[in-house]
Image (cartoon, rainbow, N blue to C red; front, side):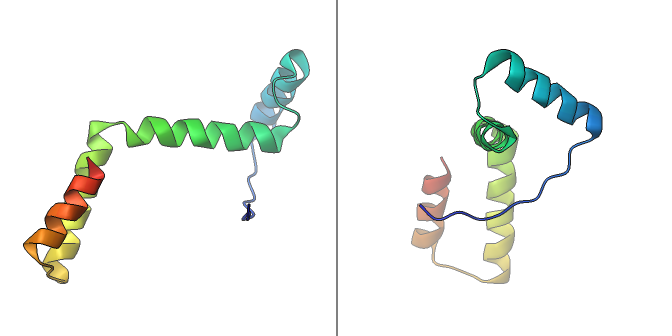
Length: 82
């Protein structure tokens, strides 16, 4: 698996809360693993929100107006978002 680097700076208090959680639970081995799982879960939540789906449709339609595509292609893209 290929990886990309992301640098994140947490406020000190949040960093301490994460450290405390990791120490007390042992669920994750380090902040990096905790952060990756947090991002995964948040993306799942966001992708299940109707407002995000509507935003994607709006963006798709705006792009379609700028760069017209066939109706079939547009319907295929919209089906992919459902």
